[in-house]
Image (cartoon, rainbow, N blue to C red):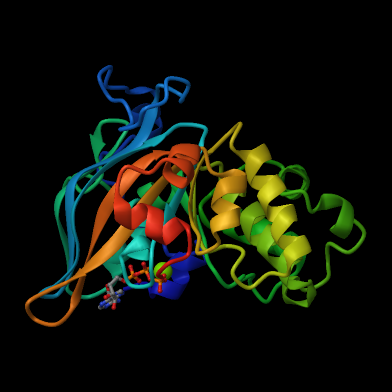
Length: 301
Ligand SMILES: Nc1ncnc2c1ncn2[C@@H]1O[C@H](COP(=O)(O)OP(=O)(O)OP(=O)(O)O)[C@@H](O)[C@H]1O
Ligand SMILES: [Mg+2]
């Protein structure tokens, strides 16, 4: 059984493929799928969609009844107070929670209309199409070059490695800073550079969606702005979902924002749910729900 860390690093051993063609799935589109929003100028295409998604850790229901749609080639921000289930949701999008014992869901998660939790789906193939970048930069303790090349080799990418390394580092806006020291250990880079290296590694395997769970939480303001610039650039090619506690960050980069909150349960725990989802300027300037207004104006959370 591969550890969650292996999966986080994208080096989990390959599992037997079970008749999944997620590349084919990219082209599939349900014509009536639209994000729940009031704006007309969103990309019409929906990459990921949840339908009444409820997630459990054992008997504990962490989130309940989430229905939302992630538009293609846009940045979608998930915001809300600690414990409302943002990480749980984002990990449902690439089946990373499967690695947690007792975790299960009710409801559906669709990737271009394909049911991601169908028995025929290989979770490793899902994680290749839908990559992940974590809060704490986690480069391998290997050279900058091998941080890209190793993962690519493990999953059997046949492309010229020098070219793949350069392209990935260029796309992650890191090439100019590291091109003369590709043999240096990745962990010797600054935090901001390490995070861009992790983004380079995530995109080197040519995913379709990049999930980022608080990717700037451990970065200084300048590195944060660099990663934000990078996200704006990357959304031309990828669809991005980001969890952030930084409201300014959400308004700077997100096209769409989903606000989650948590309610007390009879058992004394908390349960997350989606309060409101729409164009970022609407969520921040004219939210429909009182709780959204209170949260985005810093009155709680
Ligand atoms: N591996 C796990 N096992 C059991 N419960 C978990 C696990 N991970 C999260 N939870 C619980 O699920 C709920 C939602 O947690 P989650 O980490 O998704 O929240 P979050 O919104 O990402 O919070 P934060 O902003 O602090 O990162 C919490 O009550 C948390 O304790
Ligand atoms: Mg979290």
